[in-house]
Amino acid sequence: MFRESIKVLDCSIRDGGLVNNHKFSFEFVQNVYRALAAAGVDYMEAGYKNSDQMFSREEFGPWKFCDDDLLWKMKEGVENGPKVSVMADIGRADMSKIKPRSESPYDMVRVACYARDIDKCIAMVNEFHDLGYETTINIMAASRDNGPELDEALDQAEKEAKTEVIYIVDSFGYFYQENIDKLAKRYKKWVKTKKLGFHGHNNQQLAFSNTIQAIINHVDYLDCSIYGMGRGAGNCPTELLLTFLKNPKFDVRPILDTIANGFIPLQKEQNLEWGYIIPQMITGAFNYHPESAIKFRKGDDRENYRAFWMQVSGQ
Image (cartoon, rainbow, N blue to C red; front, side, top):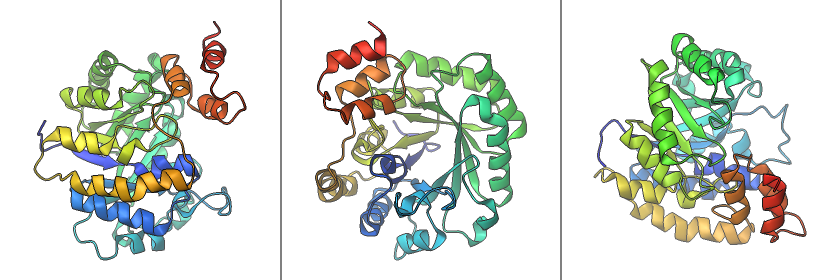
């Protein structure tokens, strides 16, 4: 489906960093950036902009912090590459060290929050906006916080936030296409002056189809990740989305190369697990956080799917 307003944001390194504590080599990430540039992708999310006063650089890799020098180096030698995005957690970024966008290697800052924390999210987003950055608000767990608190958060974000985009986030991979249709219409009831985005998880193998439904509902900012890499069940695969969009500016071949030469070897070398597996399917079906399935997979009884089903469902 071709629509000029659609923007593709690849979050392989940011969401994928939740699989390996952001311990990607510099060469791996630089190769991903170059592949996304060759593929014509609009944005690459390089990781988190978190303070090392709150997180250990020994425990977490460099993409948890996304130091400016690191991102400048990543972009070297690439002309007209994707805009670079980082994600900032509420209260975890050292705003005193954030430079104006005109002096920065990244273009966009995304702030994720639950509906109950919309006040803090708006304050942070507005601070980044005033420094010149593109911004988004990603309201997580829409499948849980979907009562009046969601409407109130959307109304407040529309009135008070300077952001350009508000995201629908299927944090637990719980939604079906009809849910996306209803949510997109609901968001548009409150959000009149900003664009919408969608970030889906693949617990029930629906991240791609739900992204297509979001496109049908005129959601313009679409998240994806190469080979679906992301925490737990992962995300909508970049290679599927680019193939579907039929926009001549996109070329999926560089993505296929980096899957073969980068992501599959990485998965084997670091013994990483992501994507559709039965425990993640179960958490998706019951609207549970994926962390419970990740923990289950680390236990001695990791193949006892019936036991996990009974644990999650209470049946």
